[in-house]
Image (tube, rainbow, N blue to C red; front, side, top):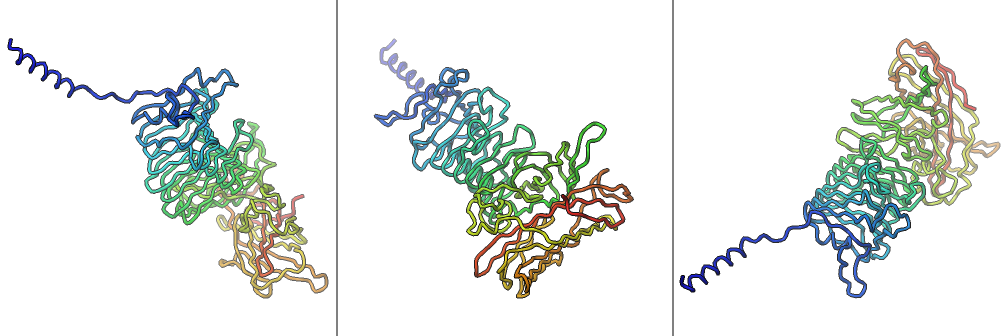
Length: 546
């Protein structure tokens, strides 16, 4: 054979081979085999580190952690990854970071102006990590749909599939911007230390959704979905901007956050209103030995009401939830809650997925700033629970000099309660132009007094009058609430048509009076607890509970 022909044949074969040889594909798994980050001398990424894996993974890949390094059995083993600077963006999509069977802490105390994980692509799943001490937020989600956390009971690590996100300089999690939709945060501890009982606060709050974030879910309907959001420096969960809509906050434990439990700003979540808790009935144990709490009230439409028990005005312990067609609701809760009637709170999630702030039933003693005024009363008064009042001498509870209650149960759905009480205030209170905020029987009204110290709500159902005695100089405030609707759909223990059995009930009627004038602002508060028995179709008498 001609050598030139042979050489040409070999050349063609070699060229062809170079064309069809595939490029190396991303590994299916990238295993983190050390707790390093960057080389201190060269500043380059250490091979086998978390940073190295985040730089190399592509769509469909997973980052896992070596069992010999991130040891579960040896509790003294150093499993903390100290991060020097911002980690690479997760921008490829469909990447899993899974530490659910390992003990892995990602610590950002060495960073400047950096968040922990910044995710700008969709389909990513983050499980099991502890993310702490970053100068900004723990996790930032932007323009994407992802799953953060999972069931804490699944996996052998301290967090299971969930995450612990604590001690960061801004928020625990930020979900930000248009297109940041359908993210799920579940099974996470946000603001707690490793024990789950003490604070390791995120400075600005638990979870922030803003600037057009829509359709995101914090928690969920299953037990394993619940997040615990506690001890944070701001609000537990907050939503901002009118374009941020359909964001659900379901089944979580939200407690002891300095700025409150759940707050909506600027018309976010379609401005959905919290449910009104209007009546609570404690039923004694039945033949099976189970006591029940019967809770009723109203909502603004169809959706789900969730009940919580909390020693503040947040949602520390999830009790139960039910979906209703709209209007009235009535929920039965199994358990003996005789001593906790004042601790009930509730949220309402409408049919579009918008969750409301927490409503409260009764005044509680949670006092973040130690000024002797409860956080709940300060929020109702428009002051900050984290900013001590300048006049703490006005913080003590006011005494009632007279109490009268009339209950009318003449017709179904037309039941009413008329409350009239006189409360003694400190002397020297001006009248004209003073703003009085009244919170009573589950409703809140802001009234401006005239020169005679009188005001009435726009619907005429709440009135307030202040009067100073010419003899003693003592100012009294008299408030009156009438025709405050009482739900009747309470089942066998409640008030129904042709009911003749007497029912012992407890109604909490908290009142917060906030005065604001040229002389400054002051907060006064009063709580009335009424125990009464009533028969359907007749008027019942009431007496002050001892």
